[in-house]
Amino acid sequence: MKDSRFTTGNPFGYKLASFSKYMLLILFSLTTVYPLFWVLLTSFKDDNEIFGNAFGLPRIWKFSNYLYTWTSMNLTNYFINSIVYTICAVAVILTISGMAAFVLARVLPNRIIYLYYTIGIMIPFQGITIPFVRMYHVFGLNDTKLGVIIAYIVVNISFSVFVLVAFMKTLPQELEDAATIDGCGRTRTFLSIILPISKAGLATIGIIAAVNSWNDFYVTLMVTSTESNRTMNLACYLLRATGERTAHYGLMSAGSVMLVLPIIIVYLLFQKQVVKGLVAGAVKG
Amino acid sequence: MFLVNKLGGIRKRKDILFSAVFLSPSMILYTLFIIIPIFMSLYYALTRWNMVTTPVFIGLDNYIHLFTSDPDFRAVMKNTFIGFFLSLLIEIPFSALFAYIVYRTKGGFKFFQSVFFMPAVISGAIVGLLYFLFFNSQFGPINALLKAVGLGFLQQNWLSNKSVVLYSVMMPMLWQMIGYYFIIIFAGFQSIPYEIIESSVIDGANSVNVFFRIAIPLNKDVLQVCIILCATSIFKYFDIPYMMTGGGPGTQSSFLSLYMFKTAYLAEYFGRGCAIGNILLALAILTTVIMNFIFSIGEERI
Image (cartoon, each protein chain N blue to C red):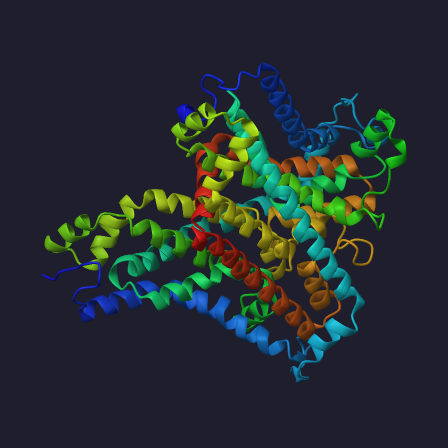
């Protein structure tokens, strides 16, 4: 990709401009990273030190902030919930979107059904919250773990089907025809042929759905009311409410660091896939 | 044996049965929990309802109340529109600018990509919590920094001062999303054929010319996607303001979705909440449609 960037030979010959460009980028990088860095520092400070020493490194490194916050807020519960909800939701989304996309791309490419699925993309969840909760009440899904998982699935259906249909339409028809000639029924074709070669499209959907589900706050807030069903992001809210009340800002910072760490670790490890997935999905939309 | 061609071919009954089975899980969930609620919302907006007793039909009263005798609603709409223009006018140009600068630098673009995009993967709730701490007027670094630089008179209660709080609450969104649009636009720039730029440089173009006359026009599609995403995201903006200020003093930092939440769940006006929700829905859809329309006008000229 280096050749396509506009730098080879530096056609304008501005060495000074080059330096100031880097300065600007580094400045922006610092402003991007600084809030996280500052909270990290604050999390190791004693409550009294926070008020006196806003900037500097902590004089005493109070590691106990972390253990205390984790145990007193029972973050294990939230963490496990987040993981379980995300994994289940993503598994189901991949399956049912794949099934629907296969039908709409190859088997019964009906324009009306496709449009029906894709108008959902324009509908923000905020617009239908109240009746959604009412429907959940009718089905007895309110404040249940299953309810949260279904909610995560439902909000991702439109977009997943949209992206997968576009993707599957680019798959070579010949493979399918060959399978059919060899006697495969539709189901067999789907399982043995289409799914394996759709890995890229499924990966895109999977990453978007996983990030959406892991980062979700509003939907979980609407569906759950007892703390045992809640996720990490809702723990944030509890943390803020208790932290504000008790002014134990060191503990709050430690909590924030622990809550943000998982996603940052996953991001740093799987950067290429995460960025590619999130961006590819957006561009197709 | 049957022929399957792009126009459909011969459909056997088996295909229809197969389609029904394979479409049903997603179709059922989607219809039950997205489509039907849309119609329910349209109905409930015309009622007075507290979720416990049966809804009482009151016609357009909710909407009339919102538009004529609800100062909070007006304030919230004003906030939402300020947010709308602010986010569009800051996020897109800056992302494009940074994308261009990184595009024009020799090395390190992987590092910059990595750093700039990172805020976008963090959840809104955590960002809200981070900035709740960061903007704290007593121990947050912003006031301390201003004081150290000599601009102490600019210090304030970022989260409780009525005139600033709206902007304090918008800043994390800019922090998060500039990196996101940056990556998309940068990818767009990378797909510009180098020959075009080479020949324009030979013709005497400088950096600025290339940016405005080549890089941007060739990436119209990419920019369209970013602009539409940015425009519709303000209507969903909930997590960060809720975490940072809960809506601000009064409604000073409330946006439309937050106001809907408060009306329905705190004031228990579920009918009116649905009305606000419908307005939100209409605005989101309208924005998308109008933006698409504006962009398609440009295309017709070519």
